[in-house]
Image (cartoon, rainbow, N blue to C red; front, top):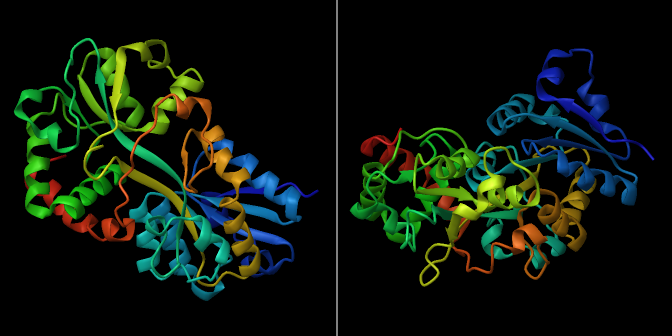
Length: 342
């Protein structure tokens, strides 16, 4: 059986000897542009190849780089599929014209309507709840929803990522969709007023901030915490017993969900293979591995989660239309600028 090849974006750009035409039109291949950077995804690719005989050629890079590259390549692009993280990037790819609508009864049946594009240009395959974590020693009554993070009683206690991060942007975009722009701006200002430090680092750093005492409350995607349950994460795993968590807004809209997903490229030379791969990602087998391999929640309802994810407990997720949320990102960035969220 062929072994999937792995080509970095930088190497592909630098290597003029590669013929994109021959790469694109080889039989039994699939050219995957991916900004998912998880080594555990290797099993997803190898099992698809074993089941179908289709070799996956991977080109990896940051989402914006890949989208720009696909635009530049135009009709000669070898890309069959774009995989990326966060709804805003999927919508950005759609707006850039690098995806196409597809007709798949499998995807329509298995992927919930709010986790897919209204024009069938992208579909979500895994989710991460963006929830509130807190220091159990210092916080006896943690915030119960996102709005509560702006309560003055939490002044000097909150850690959060920067406004340039897509997770931050999409969360505020969801607040806009659920509560309106005026309420969203008041919320963002209140959170800034409650910062324990200037925004810095990734989600794991927000959790480490609880351990180090830099802050008492933070927000992170669930899979960063679940990963620290499953395996050793430096500066975090040994102190997990200090950290509590809240799935926000359980009596209202529910916890905000980030999405990882993909779509078929606009000029996919191996379109049938691309659709087959998308349908495979919606299978029970692949859905279970998103959870077991990367501590994510499956997009398909009813698929069992891994033990590390199950330890977080049951919750209600926000079922807001993520396409609508993605369209609010420019307004969210404007609000961030106005309130001084760095």
